[in-house]
Length: 269
Image (cartoon, rainbow, N blue to C red):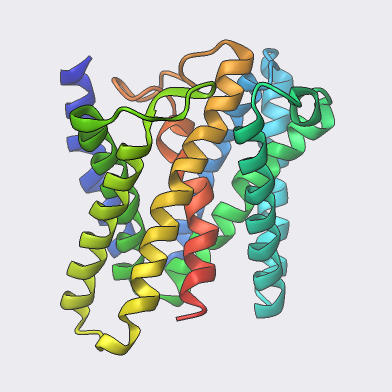
């Protein structure tokens, strides 16, 4: 599967980078909304909804809630509220990850709660990404992506080399504490390069480096949160739309957590 994985990345990554740089925010936001719809379709399967009609209804509902949230987010105070609520929700998800397999019924027992989990997974992410693209330069959008990719790559290589202590063995046995630390170091290095490129004064370095640590950490949480549903539903990949990579949700799981935190963090720097 290595060759299809590499070929898919070589094709899609440049196209996505081009879209970030070249597309107007309105069109780019709708492109992202397509990913949200596909991710929600896959998420429906992870919550054991197999019927195509019901999966489509969930996907439509998630898109609808995202559009409503985006409309309210045109007001800065409402945007901040959405980001804070998302941050609190991810704090709750951290508890579910730590306590797994206990308390499964709390977040998986009710169909309504499972569907609401999908809304909370995708809507704040889309609102954050749309506003990031609109209110900041494409450099900052690319920075977010590079932080996530760098943290993921760093965690993989360091974990393979020296990883011994398991991070969350009940959820994702392959992740190690050493790998996470390696991912954080990679993210800090990427942030340092960005600060040099943008000629940002040293007075702001502490805030940006802290942001790199937070984003690399919560990106792991986004991955682990999807793994909760995979393990509970007995599914290896969220889909097979991307050769060698699985589904859309498998590629954006880290982004679901990182995007709201990134936009919120930028507002404090």
